[in-house]
Amino acid sequence: MKAIVLHGAQDLRIEERPDPGPGPGQVLVAIEKGGICGSDLHYFQDGRIGAFRVREPMILGHEISGRVAALGAGVEGLAEGQPVAVSPSRPCGACRYCREGMPNQCPNMRFYGSAMPFPHIQGAFADLLVAEPEQCVPTDGLTSAEAAMAEPLAVVLHAASLAGRLLGRRVLVTGCGPIGLLAILVARAAGAAEIVATDITAFTLAKAGALGASETINVREAPDGLNRFEADKGHFDVLFECSGVAAALAPAVPALRPGAVIVQLGLGGDMTLPLQAMTVKELILRGSFRFHSEFRLAVEMMRTGRLEVVPLVTHVRPMTDAGAAFTLAADRNEAIKVHLAFG
Ligand code: ZN
Image (cartoon, rainbow, N blue to C red; front, side):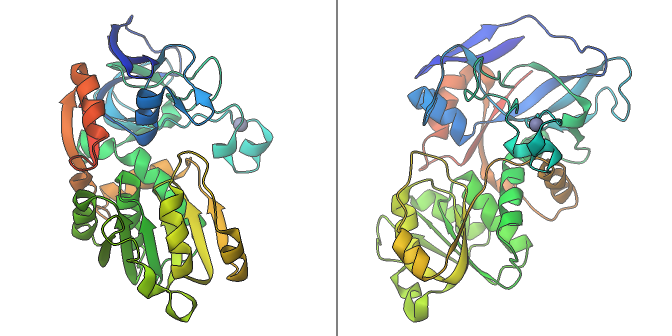
């Protein structure tokens, strides 16, 4: 099989690896689609995410869908040929955080394509993948592209669960990459009264408008575009911060009502917060990191037609063109979600 292996910054190679087989109780999945995520891009561009540097060759990728190719002995509930989305979340299930219902905080987490631990956790951008049955969620009725969106959608569903009530609320979304756009879809599905979105590219903001944002603001062209929401101590009840950039968050704070919730999803470098302004308005800051149980919910919401994620997938490229696909995925003037096609 072929795999997409990162050796260091800007050093992505397609390598031949031995075909794996499923052991007892395991599932062999023939991967069909893999979505390029912001974290894959950080590893590719910089060889690191913050403090986590790629120190050995690592297969990238964790947004994946495919078909069951073979079942190990004793696996029930799945069938050969069945389409599945594969959750990259692999907590240990035994540590204190797993037992306390916080599996996304598991210190033994083996999340695909992560340089946080060493040896690194190898990713899933390969033609074949051996997974545990619990990771494989049937996606009958969905396309492989939709199924590969389950992972980023799960990220946003986890964030929405931390945001509190969204019904009837005024929501601000900063950053309209895939996560920000999914936040718009989720806020709309949850009954938000108003959804305003900011970004710095016209392309992503046009998508935001098409997906249901009530208003979009290009904060590069109009740096004080949020000013009019500052009257009467602010306007928005919830902020989904999806950019990971302090320059996006700082001007949003005066537009938030007292007691508003900031859900921070964006991951980048460290961000400076206007803590004094946040304190006097009693704003609530909630970090949101990954997901676990929300993966099945994400598949279920797509299967029942409550969310339409297809417009986010702007490009599909063969996995053998991974280098060009990664460069394309980094261009927010042209691409939202780029999928690699395997097999
Ligand atoms: Zn654990």
